[in-house]
Image 1 (spheres, protein in one colour):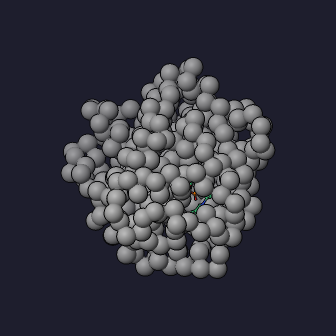
Image 2 (cartoon, rainbow, N blue to C red; image 1 turned 90 degrees about the vertical axis):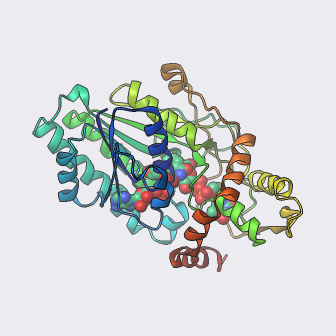
Length: 357
Ligand code: NAD
Ligand code: DAU
């Protein structure tokens, strides 16, 4: 790993990964290519913007000429591919962009990489890696008591987002099988932590609660997700890059599966304590059950046996500590929050998704 291209590094997990990576690897050059959609935010990387090992390039993974030029200019030998449209509710209201970015963008990136690494033999194939960051949502939904998903579970994506990610996983695998592109894939469960865009359940709940706004819980709130602190995800990706077997996929999960309603109630209880005396205490009074997400997956659960036995990875954060840290992070970063929330796009999204619920 000498010249690393991170795509989507201005997003939630990408920016956390860049921080993690630059803390862990000293002798490396890292190029962050991001088109800066509504979800991209360079404020999340302000502290390392002038690090001589780091370079930001504004660019789109669908632009093959630009990708080709970046690969060659920086002699990229390692790619960590985060760039995607990532929000399920947006994929329900407008699926086209998910196909453009997640399917066509991943295809464009793969094809440019194949040309550079395989056709033009830019590096020895033992020295390169295309790592694709994917999701547990490709597996669909579990009934109560069904066993957790393993790396062998057949794909059954339910939302346009999940289907677009499943397609991208298949494309990556096919480039390995057909052209010999050295790749790894990780499928991870729900992340939470610093720098998460407040359209997702945990930051939305924290920020709405602080303003005394309703806390929307879809349906009966008994849907189950597997929650993982974003730093644990970054560590797992790093380990897969460093030690994972080429051509392998690894499941990553947090061993935490409370119902959505429990997550929202826990955040309310944390705020009652850390923000004691706030006008809206007890925050649980703000919870509102609203119309369910169409096609809402009921339950996720990841079997992480493979990554724990092969690479020795286990999540370090418990959900209780992780949620407390996350609430405290949002309280301590009012500037980051206010810039994101003042954007017209964000206000428009809240109206589009919640007004008719
Ligand atoms: P995010 O929405 O916060 O960030 C996505 C980033 O990609 C943004 O910076 C955006 O500007 C950039 N981007 C979007 N389209 C682009 C394009 N065409 N070209 C270049 N950049 C583009 O997403 P996230 O939550 O950080 O997720 C990152 C990756 O991890 C995604 O691939 C997602 O599917 C996957 N994932 C996310 C989670 C989760 O819980 N958030 C869990 C598992 C896997
Ligand atoms: O499982 C991994 C996936 O987790 C990632 O691949 C996605 O990129 C990421 O967005 C996330 O998807 P979810 O749909 O699970 O995340 P979200 O935070 O949107 O929702 C979490 C749960 O909370 C889900 O069951 C829907 C519910 N929810 C969400 C919102 C935004 C609510 O009840 N109310 C809400 O307002």
